[in-house]
Length: 390
Image 1 (tube, rainbow, N blue to C red):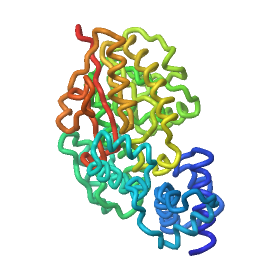
Image 2 (cartoon, one colour):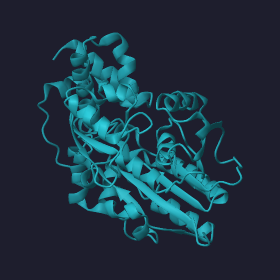
Image 3 (tube, rainbow, N blue to C red):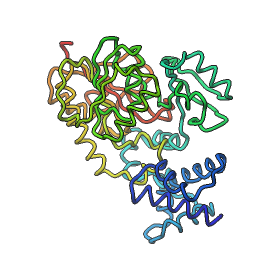
Image 4 (cartoon, rainbow, N blue to C red):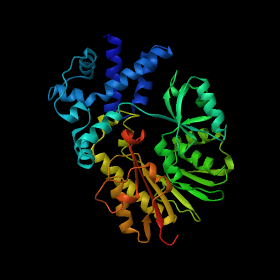
C-alpha cells in the first residue's frame, strides 16, 4: 500500500460522491496531477479506482455508523482483509433500496447474477460504414490482435472479447472506423426502422452516437433533426458527427428544450430520455454511490414530459432508457398510453433478442428489456409506440 494510491483513491471517491461526477471524469480530474504518464501504469490505477468505487457500499456496510474519511476507506480497502458481509446487498455493494426493488422484480438469484455481471463491463464496437466496410474493419481489428465476436442479428456490431490495449486506443477507434456503442443502444435505434427520405427527430441527441447510427442505417439519406438542451454537448456532437463522416446535409443540430419544440412533418421520433443510468453501472460503478429514489423520481417526471411531447409530434416514437427500473420504463409508457389514446406498443423483429418487460404491466409482453447477465449489454428498456391508424 502506497500513500500515493491512498491519496488517489480517496480523491477520486470524493469527486464521485460529493461532486456527483462519473468515475471517468473523477479519474481524469485527479490524475492530472497524481498519475504516472506511462499508459500501463495509468490503466492499472484506473482499474484500481474502478474496483474501489464499486466496493464503496460494501465498505459502508463494514464501517457501519462510524464516521470515517475517504482516506480511511481507501486504507481499509487496500489492506484487502475485510470479512464477507452477510447481507446480500452489502456483498453486491449495491444500495439496499435498489437491491430490494430489483429483487422484487427478478428474484434474489437473478438479481445476484445481474449485479455480478455489472462488475465486468462488456465492450461493443459499432463499425462505422461511413468510414469503412464491416469486413474491412473487422479484419483491421483482428490484425491489431483483438479477439471479437460479430453479433448474429446486427453484423455491424462486434463484441470485444480480448484486446491488447484499451479499446479507445485501437487504431480503428482512433480513426473513427469503429465507434464504442453498446448493443442495446444500437437495438434502440434499429427499432425506428429508418428509411431513406424520412425525417427523424432525435429529441435528446448529444453526444451524437445514436444520431450518427440513424444516419448510417439510412445511408446518409434520412434527415435527422438532432435536439439537445446543452450547448457544450451539442458542440461535441457536431465535432463527433464530422469525424464519423456523417454527411453534414443529413443532420440539423438544434439547441432547444425538447419539451417545448414544435416541428412539423416528423416521420419518426427517437426519445432516448435522460434517466438514472441504473443500467450503466457496468460502465460507471460510481452510479451505485450516488443513485437515490429521489433522483429516479426526478428523471421519471422529465421522461413523462418528454414522451408526452414526442407523441404529439409523430405517429411512431421509440422510447428508450438505460435503466433497470420499471419506474422509468414500463410505468412511464403505461401512463403515456393512458393519456394519449390511439397509441399502442408494437413489437419489433429484434424483440427475439430481447427479454420482455417486467410482469404486471399492460405493456410487458410488447416491450424490450436487455440486461448484462443475459444479453451482455447495458441494462436497457425499449418501447415502440405507434398510432393505431398508422
